[in-house]
Length: 119
Image (cartoon, rainbow, N blue to C red; front, side, top):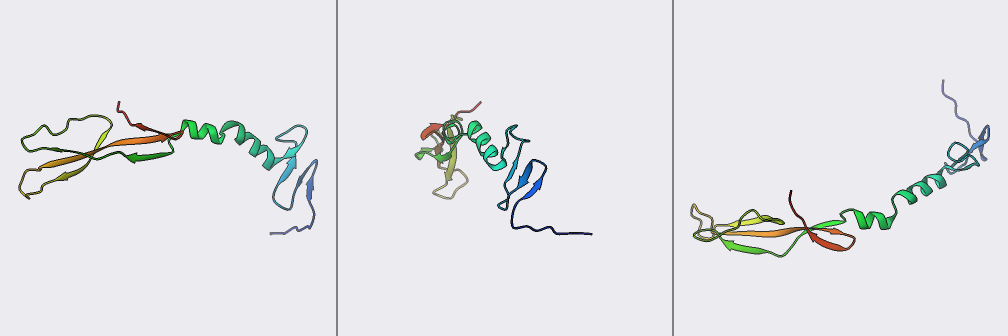
C-alpha cells in the first residue's frame, strides 16, 4: 500500500523539519541545528577550494611544438622524456620509413605548463 502525504508548509519530525525546496533542518549535522545544504557547502568549501584545486591538479594537457628527424641513415630519436611520437612518414612509399615526428607532452597546473617526465 502506498500513500502520499502533501502539505504546503513544512513536514516536522521531532526537532527536524523538511522544507518545501528539499532542504532539511536538524541537529544531526550541527548540535545547534543547521540546514543540511549549508552544512554540506561549508564542508566542501573547507576541503576543496577552487584555489586548492587549481594549484594542485592537472587542469589541461597538450602537445608542444613539433620536431622531426630523418630515420633512414640518420640519428632518429631515442626514448627521451617528455616526447611522444606523433607521426611517421614514408615519403617515397618503400619498405623503410624516412622521417619521424615527435612533440613534448605537457600538463597545466595552476596556469603553468610543465613537460611531463617519466619514471
